[in-house]
Length: 132
Image (tube, rainbow, N blue to C red; front, side, top):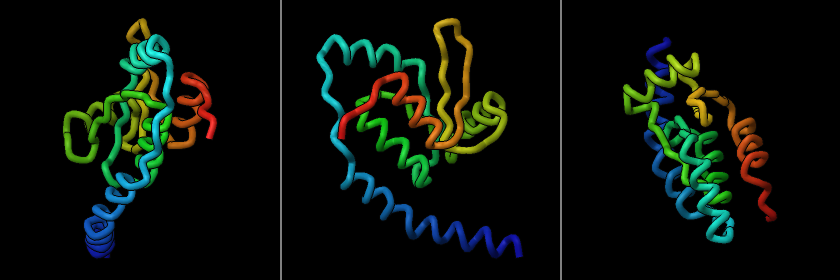
């Protein structure tokens, strides 16, 4: 029975995945425009961030949209198909669950933030609210 459910949801993901990615592409928001000096500062701060994600996860799509809205160049790491990133997520964060934002501070310490809403709240607090 477990095999049946696994195959069922895998099939649903295979069918819906391309549509979700197309929807993401078509509805991508415009990024915030900052003065050049401010954008360079934001990009420098964003170098310490990495988003562990699955490409068609709806919660990951939500976080990626917000990254684009805030014009943040955060490294995306595929924890679904890349065993290195999957292992790093499990060992560093404690669980293989996406989305997960890895925050590396200036001293090299890592903080792992799970849950899309928590990640988005953190991004807004650190990089500022964007007026709609």
